[in-house]
Amino acid sequence: MNENLTALLPEIALLGAAVIGLLAGSWLPRHRQWAIAVLAAAACVTGLAATARTMATGSEQTVFSRAFAIDAATDAGRLTVLGALLLVIAMSVETVRGHKRQTEYWVLLLMTGTGTLALIGANDLLMLFAAYLLATIPAYALSAFAKDTPGTEAALKYYLMGALLGVTMLVGTALLYAAGHATGYRELHATLPAAPYGLTAVGLVAVLAGLLFKAGAVPAHFWVPDVTQGAPTPVAAYVTTLPKIGGLIAGYRLLHQALADTNVNWPLLLAVLAAVTMTLGNLAAFFQTSVKRLLAYSTVSQVGYLLMALAVATRTDLAQKGLLIYLAAYAATNLGAFAVITELPHAHTSQDYRGLARRHPGLTAVLVICLLGLVGTPPTGIFLGKLEIFTAAIDGGYTWLAALAVANTVASLFYYLRWLAPLFTSAEPAPAEAHAVLGRWAATTAYTAATLALALGLTGGVVLLMGEGALLS
Image (cartoon, rainbow, N blue to C red; front, side, top):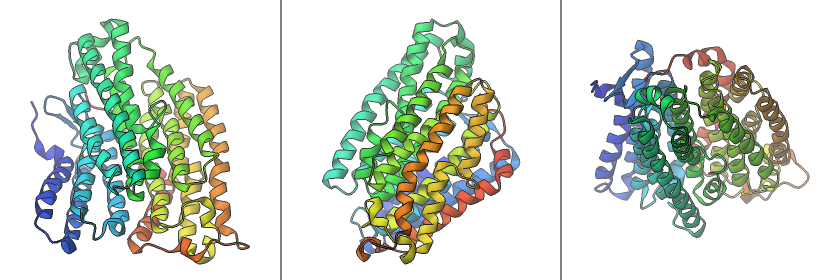
């Protein structure tokens, strides 16, 4: 048994910072609790440095009876999650500054971030479920952090759906264990092909239900618009970004490592879910005037494109690279858009952004980059991610799915332009109070995220190399 704790340094850094932060925050006066935010940022930087060292040395391994794998997908996922968590921390500074529960906010972020990292490397069904709980339960509390009516309602819906699908996921774990007599992916890969078809199929669907909930995919997407609308904007940015990274990489690893040789036609199931998710998300976004709900349904549609990589996980070598680059680009682009919303707390609808180009040209540039980036416009990173995933779908035998994805991409331009067009309206600009800014931290986050979204597209060759490498089992 490999019990190398240093291999888990990014996860340990976040978890250790959460424990230390909770203890220290209990004694610090309110005006000094900003120190916990510094501790959280330091934990993320430590995790990034440890991940960079692992990638430089090429020390891929599985630890603790192969329950956790450190490989190319884990390293790329860690970089994306930790970088995104840093952006969320910076975006949150003005929102929680002076709040009586400021310490709890940072601790909850660290805890759910740790769970997301655990999902990325989970190589065992029990590890997968434990990571699901750690990533999900703190997020319920974050959703209700404001303790107002919309936040409480959103958290309740989030909790009820998460609890239901969490139990479903646990039942699926039990069924797969009954079918394969093991929980490790390596052992399941060997035993599930000879297991009863019905038991394997039902178990897989039940486990996928929990992961689809984390990703916000159909039919487990109903919580996404309500939580995005009701939660504080930095929390909305978090729940529409980081859980997807953990859920989708975890799903990819499960399908690729444990179920590659089974008779269950899960590629077709994932292809249908991808088609329905991208289409429903786009159609629902057409009619949204609230910018937060628009981004909520946008994120549902983005999951549909990402699920294409899972559908062809075992059919082409392009799927893994496409998934990882898309996730990294989506994280930067989505957080950039939410950072602008955070910076403009009184602008709730797309019409509240009328004339923004005259008053805040920098924020306008960020919105243009991020919203066109979400469409998949070059030279942003999502363009590269979509290109890779669409190519992977064609290479994997799902040309119809790639064609539908292209049609959805073109259609999505409509509702993003409905938000972008008012930015340059000079005839009837929105009232000045609608464009009142929050502070420099959210603005800096917006500029940083937009720069990263462009950089990922312009340095695509280097980024794609980071996504290469076989998964360990």
